Image (cartoon, rainbow, N blue to C red; front, side, top):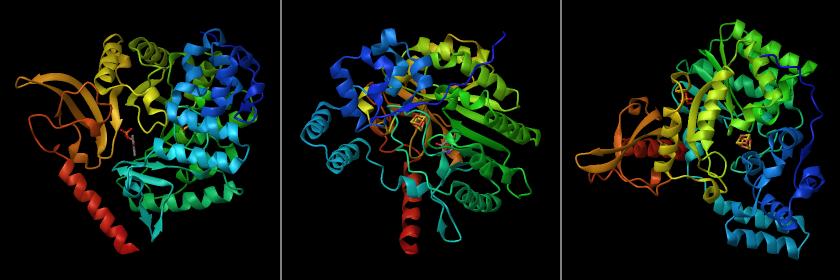
Length: 451
Ligand SMILES: *Cc1c(COP(=O)(O)O)cnc(C)c1O
Ligand code: SF4
């Protein structure tokens, strides 16, 4: 297949202050535009010209998955929240009052499970490493401070973009210093996963500060560098056309030629994101550096809640040499009620898609919930000792010994999360719960005695 070289357009982004300038927007009714204004004051909203011009089918925008992925609509807020924001916008132009209302609504959308962040945040020499989460033994999650925004925002996501400081390069160096120190002391960690936001929002000069220390002498045991990114779906031109793109590709090649496995953990939510000439070319160029592309996505109602979308997406990924990796159950979503799919239905969609593709696509695992104790996969609905149950297992556990043991929950076709499930056969607790509680208490005790 010959792919002609793509010419990079200038990057143009739209958000609340200028979205009415999007040329295609005249297709929307006045009330749809108003809904963007109202909902966009609560959920994240930013969309760029690649998404608008190359991904969305404007003739069918109402049902278009990428339109729903990036443009807010009325149903994404509960009616009472919509009314509250709408009233505020009608009553005032005062930015502070509007912000207060947004804040008030957001608090009700995303209650952070208490202590979750602290439970995973390590320390070194008494300094809390705020950009690091170390939950699973082998893999460290790292949030570089310059990578906490994205090329466009997904309406289902609640990672509020943070303001990026002024001297990014210096900050990146200091941050990486501590990171390397921590990794030198933790030889069990073989994988580092850069995440965000989107680390591929960074300029090359900043990004290289984070990667180059791994190419120099260090005593870490890092064997894989993973980059969690949605850039291939939202701005594939990052890797096409100009000098900056070339520098990224050279750096990637330097990493892989050192014998370090470099993996893009690439977020794709729909097969339409795999089909543009730009994404095809970006994937080819990246693959030529020796890096691997693994793919993942949450299952989202109104975007990809049908087996055909997944089967097509996995096939297209394998055709382009990408490796399907995870199907996640959506959670922590501001617009949870709009996007959520019950666990039993999620499993049905997974199975329908999985059984219709070749074995090369079946590297994918799911549906998986990233819950407090670990990543829990729904293996399916079974009947055990005359009872209908859900069979589950850990793909990752806070205690690695939990991984891979099947366990059972009472059948429940409404449940959308692990916390909605009850142990089967009249047990009071799942096998891991007592240990999880004591881990939690230990951590809380040590934090209290520190302060
Ligand atoms: C998913 C995840 C990882 C990576 O797990 P893998 O199964 O190795 O992909 C690491 N840390 C956290 C906190 C995660 O949620
Ligand atoms: S962090 Fe990922 S899921 Fe969230 S808005 Fe950015 S690209 Fe989308």
